[in-house]
Image: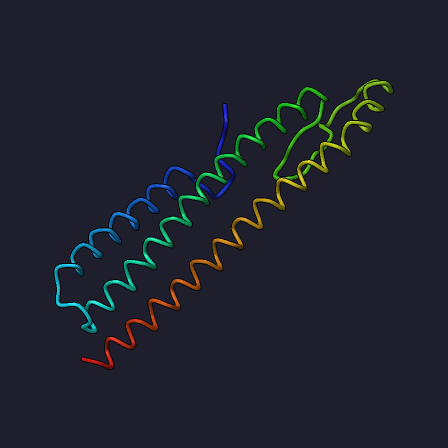
Length: 153
């Protein structure tokens, strides 16, 4: 069973992206029916472009989150097979008494598993950071377009 990463739901993120893209398409279609070159049409087209961009970014994020959840699930399975636990992004030894041989095996397997967990956590963080930048940029463009439209009316 694959569990989503904590604080994420790829299905909801993808659905929101789809809603934004559908709204963008409807807005662009509505703008096409208006008199071209007016401030309202310009605002509608700009808004539709940025809504579509945000929707696309969210859908890419959803796909990457789903892939990361699968990779984390596989990592958890490998950790469990090695007698280790995956908690958040840390590979740890469970409490309890084990033989010296099992402890040595766990110690040997822990470092490469932790390195993989670190790479996966870094990948998720980069993806979230990129999405945050893209959404902030689109928000700024939308705010600027709204100001221009307000100034012209």
